[in-house]
Image (cartoon, rainbow, N blue to C red; front, side, top):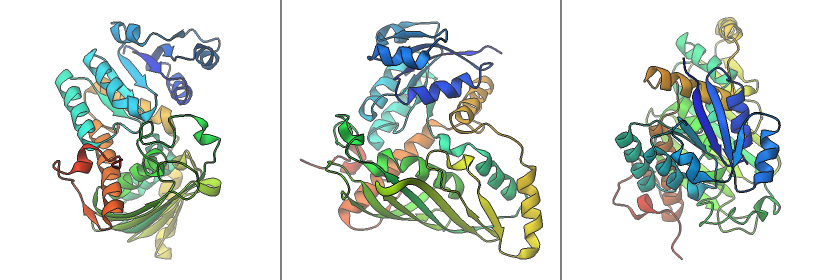
Length: 355
């Protein structure tokens, strides 16, 4: 099996991506890290035999590369991912995949035309807790999902927004709904399935920024389950918390903000007689790669087999963008919005508010 020859563009979150690749040395060969700040790139690479460069065009023209990982500010994701696909390479792309459903559709069309794989980054899906839930479902110990509550309560202050593109519509293309809760909403829909309708309120209450830093959202899922999402960047600590009530048990996550599936989740049977079976199934789930390494392992499997398997797909990324658009549409209209969104809607093409 040939290793996937890879380059990373962006040494910020790219540092965490690199750690994921390095955890899979038999699957990936990271050859270059590209960043305009060469000192930062060299610091991230350290003594490893990985080239550092600020020449993006050279990477795109390098026929020895199989995959380029895009870790740039949000407004650059879709344009660069398009260039990578057009260059005949696979793409890993940080969230958000695009800045509107229309831009996501155009990007997916390029991926389909070029025959290259486009992998959005949703690493929260990968960890022991999610595998334990999957095992409980396979053992018929969850039953129908009834209701869920989700908290993305983090602490982001003025120093976080000192980077010029953050907190702006032009640079970040959204606020806490897009940049902070998008991973948790993907985890929620991974568990509960697609959203049928959304009702939302958004507000800017914590920081002097253009975009929202608080939100309260209600979801009706296609399955009939209901869920709420509470978002703020004005919390005392960084906390992610999920609770889901199923027909036969209730799951409660821990509070780990950036790797919730790595934390300990509790699974409490509604009928005490089922608890021993629940505990046995959870205990039997073996070690699993988590976070970025888990995401990249499933990508490598998909590239090798030609099948999606457990990999995050381009369509998953598109759905996450459509959900963001629906949240903004609901908040501005003051009413529930159903999905899928019509391509004729203005917000389908651009969700930035009119100036």
